[in-house]
Amino acid sequence: QLRLVESGGGLVQSGGSLRLSCVASGNSFDYYRDYAVGWFRQAPGKEPEGVLCMSRTGDITHFSDSVKGRFTISRDNGVRTAYLQMNSLKPEDADVYYCGIKLRTCPEAGHEYHVWGQGTRVSVSL
Image 1 (cartoon, one colour):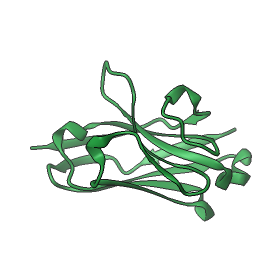
Image 2 (cartoon, one colour; image 1 turned 180 degrees about the vertical axis):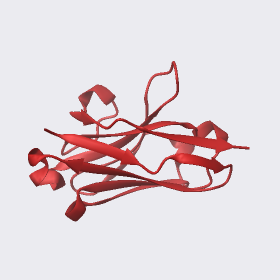
Image 3 (spheres, rainbow, N blue to C red; image 1 turned 135 degrees about the vertical axis):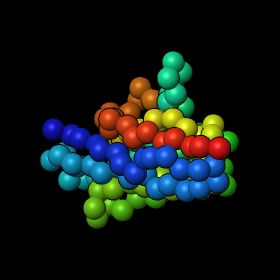
Image 4 (cartoon, rainbow, N blue to C red; image 1 turned 30 degrees about the horizontal axis):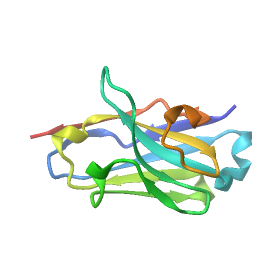
């Protein structure tokens, strides 16, 4: 059974930083390096918004101009984990953040990802 688990969310003051983690498990993740990993966020009542994605080759796709220069994505294939480093957080960044995986490439459409985690909540105070 394929599974993704996000962690690292929490409450932070505006201007602060958080690092989210997305850990993959399950036999089908023996070739974790073949998957692209994307980070999305979703506010209540809104459609999911793509944030960043890293392909199997390490290419990075930015889905959101609002996070450029503040958020970065990385991954460690050895421990099947992807990270989202979020700096200079703003109140409008507060959302539930999800990671998803798809073979090879980074589509912007969330429905093209094969597996999703349960999400981790990020709250930003003024």
